[in-house]
Image (cartoon, rainbow over the protein chains, first blue to last red):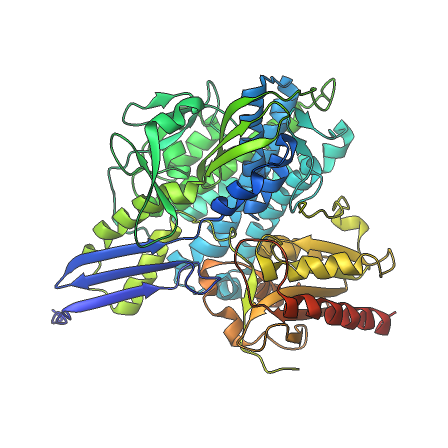
Length: 436
Length: 168
């Protein structure tokens, strides 16, 4: 039996996580004598700037402005903003328009989840530093991911007007709706995508998962008869069941010293988790029969408390999103009008939807002219921040025998389980180049 | 101050083959990170309609989908490399791998550098890919470029116009 290596007294693990801007995002863990002493996850918080920026703007501008918060999930921001405005203004859109919103949201889930599964998370499990190295050995896997992701882009481009910063969604509906024949090529691609998504579930199920579980409070939307996407009530596995309008009564955001971001808590109980695992645990029976079957074949039951298995759950959600988009587009009949008329009035509106990373809450107060007096935006990553730190408090002690490099890798992976929002930050290259 | 606007990307990949593509990467709400989109807006008044101009958030996989079918691609992004703010770097990505330092901290993101190298690994990199990196100074939330970066926009526009002319 190999002799155990003596443990150093103090170990510090520092991961320059998400750090596109120096000092903006980092993970810091201090361990002394085998005990975790400190876990600090620092994230940035773009919504604060946007909340200020929105004041004085017209309510119709909120979807397009907030879409700029995230390069990966603009649809989520647009739909949460639209839901909030329609809540206040008493707007009910045609079911065909609601279905189109659901379809474009499916496109965003496919894009975001596939990117995370194939390009960021799978290389972790397979021991590759990145997708580029993984592509050397498994080009066909990476190609499948890229094609699947492109179908998500295509849904967003077709229904959203363009794939980056889509502009076609508005309070009351859409600026333009597609003609049925525009959807034909996409429908064919979605049929391929359904196979590819099933294959993705089977593939992720074979990855090696650390033995790790926690007893989370999961929070997600719940819609009457379908898996939650664009609307629903807020529910949890500890008895919470509230309309979105009651969010502020049950949730609070607090300042913690080590990060300038706010951390969310359930007032009565503390930390909670949002995102794929939460949706899955709270809505398993609302998945399609095919997605449920794929999950079971992958070894998942209706409950899953291992955050490392979120990659499998994301794959199940991709399959669901592909099927759902296919169903909606195949059944599509153009609605009577692309949008309903909307008149401003004073008051407060509340909206939420299920962004790929989890519950995204918006609240706006308008004056009688429809100008925004104040805005509140709570993104999924800040809601998960406390749960991420708590995972590490529990995970690090059981992994302390690993060499430092491997331990650091696993801590990164533990954070990556949450697909924390990296694209809310800036996008510049970090370079050391000689001047040309 | 009004939110940025861009031309809709309503073309499908099949219809854009053969045209040069210029992509400005960045977030105009993060100060100097908006240099890429700022270059695109300047170019919009100066290039012929057969040149595709796009703004982009920088997410790598959709960049790869965007440049599919374009023989010549020019990308503009903000960089941080320790040179003076406003310094313009030019890389010929189709000739050689991007410097290893580009991949610093890249395991958490899949952005421009990863997209270029993954395309190279898969054999799907367009025949010509030029990257202009503009050294940024301020990346706080807010709009507007810092003066040295704003001044660099004109330089980059001039050099891109020359690149486009050289190949007709």
